[in-house]
Image (cartoon, rainbow, N blue to C red):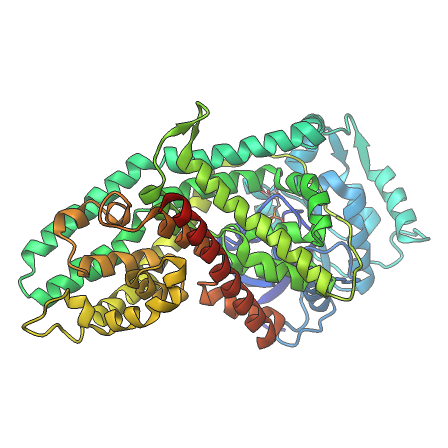
Length: 617
Ligand SMILES: Nc1nc2c(ncn2[C@@H]2O[C@H](COP(=O)(O)OP(=O)(O)OP(=O)(O)O)[C@@H](O)[C@H]2O)c(=O)[nH]1
Ligand SMILES: [Mg+2]
């Protein structure tokens, strides 16, 4: 046996495995209050009090070892020691939700039958106590024939006991007779349950009360609509002062560097390439953080599966299985984890449909693009007394993505031969007051991811674009702006006829090319292109939005709207396409997705431009 102890966390979905994993290893894997968050195996390391090191695996949640979906197969294979690089685990930590013992014991019995060393971790003890559920841990341990440790993963309680238990090698190979119990699993569970659990008050009153509102056919939909409105209003209303601050900072920095760098080429690279490019994206950090604040709070509260429940009929009609809800929801942050989350869908046609529509959900990378165009073209005025028009338009863009996804799913299902429908089977977790600390940590992580993208891919592409926009340089006797003579200028003019029916000018055409890598790049690219297009410095200092807005010499409203619509559909994200390739193992799916998304983007932008320009000229 090697020095390192190998253990794996096994349990039903949403019982707190990842929370435990994070506390044991000091990492920050994603945790949320709904089933199916973890869909891959994750490795972490920590040390026991004696100094012995432990390698721990976090696994996707599963109701049984009879796997039906790709994520459950991972857990089954690790438990059965079938994954070569994982080998055999020295022990399994069977995590059980103390408030849901009857259901969760099923998997524990299956694990016991495997005959491998086990330690049962009775998690969510705080929740159980709050609801008056009393569990006799000692008796449970006797009945199961394995040690049981109580924990409250979110409060870091009981984790030390767990470490000590591992140190003392308390995990044991269970006695298969289960202290003399006979019969089917459910019969055994009944006996054990009656023996170890006593209730003072079994009901979760808070959850029952809230569900009367949130699951009510009318009140429920109404509260969902109110919640969404508040989120989109806040994104615009709360962010403004912070965005102004960041904008001023970059204008000041640009001025300072502009004056201090004498070499004209270097000056242009820094001011027009880097600051006008990458700097113009950083401005959107406050809006991203506000959006994620709401997403994180909703995720932790346990509300989200209720929304799935409310919208189930609609999704069902569109041919999406209820299981598609969580992957589609994750896609609002980013399509990459969304597409990975489809591993929890067992039917492969349902999974295919969900993967195909996931990029239509408005990911956070679109937010800077939408926010820029909305600020430039939509006046900030109040409608119906309370709503900010800009917030309403943003809401409309999100809805457009959702409605398009439902339509595409409907068509996909229609084209498939298999018309079978899979009803919603979704566990509704208890409501929980979000932990401020974990929301703050989540926000910090999100902010870091965003800034890393700005400092990484967006920064690099801004510099590349600056080169393409600067060389070859204009001749001495140039009559037009220098950028017209550059590679990028030539390319833009070459592409422009293709995009003219959509109302895109050559500057937009140039910006679309680097934006193939990631959507926010279009903002950076427009910043660089306009900074180099001979616009005067005062106008640049006022920000990109005022440069492109219809008031100045910018675009028409029709062009602005057309570009907004383009970004609802166009697949400007290499990471998504790479994930589809990895998850489906075929280039065919990638080609279908790319072709249909570009096709839709072109068509919808075309109609938007033609209709808008016939109305507003
Ligand atoms: N009150 C309370 N909440 C907990 C406890 N442990 C975890 N949670 C919460 O339970 C929810 C699920 O936690 P996760 O760690 O994501 O659960 P998981 O078992 O990894 O879930 P899957 O990856 O979906 O299988 C989150 O909202 C956690 O904050 C606990 O001991 N007490
Ligand atoms: Mg998990």
